[in-house]
Image (tube, rainbow, N blue to C red; front, side):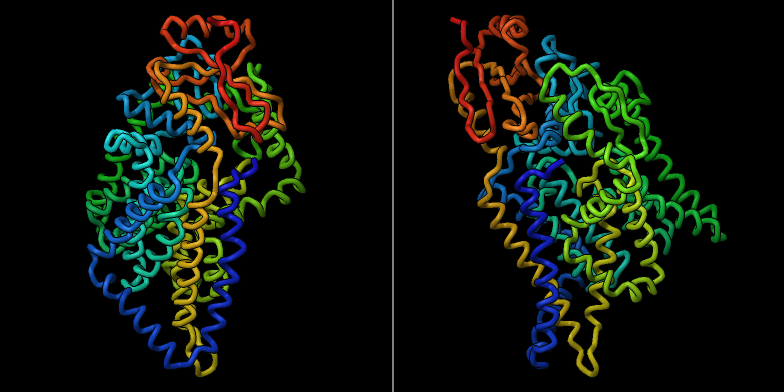
Length: 563
């Protein structure tokens, strides 16, 4: 599926600018006068050490900077409006939870409200696992705006990364790693400035990988609870990828248990707390599934796939029979855009041709040019015994990405703790690099960080100037809300490719009948008769909005033939 324009611009900027800038600054470090290099390196490291030597500050500061920076970027530069199908689906989940419900009853006119990634039957709810929606609901309830939940989840993820690093690395390198994560994803990435997800799964992964070294050193209830909480977050955010990236930690802890003589302590302090939390998590997931799908063991995601999708989420899965689509736009999306991804990967050549896009996509948003560090210093990184587990976790995540039919960067969010551990270790080796008698590595490492700062600043500027289709939709929505009374907008699309099905108008909140503006899909004048009668009985103004193509701003007009 083509990446939306604003995200594609971010990806391309990272790929094109960062690696070249890092290599250029690393080369400049070779030519820098020795005294200047020493002064710059000493000042930077002292500032980093001042934070690293205060554990509470070192863990809390990245979260505070992330929340304040993301909020300022969103409120002062360009407010995040939903644009992608998935974002509207997550917002529906958040609005549902904010209303105190796990699911909504199906609407009598549900056929007019069908849209992408949303269930209409047996209940009206998002198809996605609930974690992202729960954070959006928290933001909505606390501030009236779900974007606050995105900023909160990102801030918690940044603090969790800082805590994780301190379990794996010396304090200075933990602070350095925290800085790189903050610059990369904590403020300007779409994980922090959209409703699409990423930060919640990264939070879960950081808790799991941060608990491991602490439990390995000393089994205790506190870190066992952090481990269990991370696993619970992953199971409610990205269950498949979360399971894959957690398996190396589970295997390492099992090996540690098998080798220890204090098995009773491990059972009481690690196994029992984790089992209790995961049992409660399993009960919650079963209850949520039952509330949404009617079956405790059937996830909403798979009910939606049976109703709409023709592809399997996995490359080796079978193609599903084409359902009876009621809307041409949905057929175009599921059959014309999703299906080709699956079809062209059914041969070995097609699978191999698509594989680089998935693997590169795993690194686009979180790391980009930063991943050259563990690659260049692979031998040194591998020699560190503890780092091998992170390599196993990251490798497992890449293997899992290869099995998926469609891969988008935030699918790999659970593995970002492993990736950034490798980046930080690569930076350590760069820091110690020498060329003959000349130690230039410290300044080169600072140059890498300076490039990350430069890309961060560029993305901040890009965030402020790029327009987005979501703002067009929000403008039309606000224009209607400013009119007196309540409204129904019947949306009539032109045929693709003039109309891009990624630019979707028909999404609604949890309480359709209580909304100021309701968006409905056109079924022709005869097919719209019951819909119009239903909403006329509510005293609504009925509009028709024709969307011939995406080059024009559509203007709602009174529905023809109504008084």
